[in-house]
Image: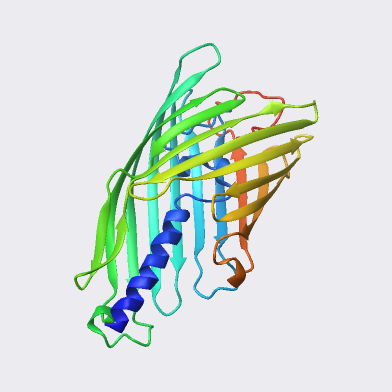
Length: 304
C-alpha cells in the first residue's frame, strides 16, 4: 500500500511537470509549432533548432527536456514542421517520454497583408516508467517496466502578418490513460492554447514585442504566460516573462549572424518549490537557411 502511495505521488508530480512543459517552454516564441501546428515562418526560410531545459536545479530527479525541431516551407502556401521532444524525470523511479510530431500548415491570404494558416498535427507519444531501480521494487506494482505508445492528433489556426500573430490550437485531441498492473499512473487530457504577439517599431534601433499564451487543460484551472521582449539593433534580445503561479523569467538572445540565433532563459520560481531549487535554465540555438530559394527579403531579422 505504501509503495502504491509513493508511485501515485511520484507520477502525479510527473504529470504536473509534463503538463507544464507541454509546451510551457520559456522560449516558446522561437518555435511556436510546439504549441500550434498552423504556425508558419513567413520569411520562407528553413528554420532548424535545438532546445534544452533543465528544470528546478538542485532537486534530484527534476525534469530535463530536449526539443529538436525544423520548419520547412515547401512553397508559399504549404509548410511542414517536425518536432521531437524528450522529457525525463525521476531518479529511483524513472519516467521517460518521447514525442515525435509532423505538422502540416496551409497558408491562405485574406487581405493584402493578412494571412490565415490552417494546421494539422500527427505524431506518436511514447511513455515509459522504469521502477526497477527503486528500493520498493519487490511490490508487484513496481515489478515491471511500463511502456506504451499513443497516437497524437492536433489542429490549429494561425492569423499573421509581418508584425502580428494570433492563434488558437489543441496539440493533442486524443486523451488517453496509462496503467501499470491495473494502477492508473498517467492521464493525458486535451490542452487548449491561445497565443498572440505584436511587434512595435519604437525607433529604427529598438523593437518591442509583447506576447502571451493562454492554456486551458480540461478539468484544470486556466493558466497563462505574458512576455515583453526587445530587439536592439537587430542583434540583441532582452526580455522578461511571467508564468502564472510558477515563475518570473529573464530572457536574452543574440543574433550571432543573420541566420544563427542563440537564446537563454532563467526561471525564478515563485511556486511552493521556490525554497527548494535554484531556478531553471533553458538554452536554444536556431539556424535558418534558404535551401529551396523561397526566401522573402526583409531588412531585419524575424522577431517571431
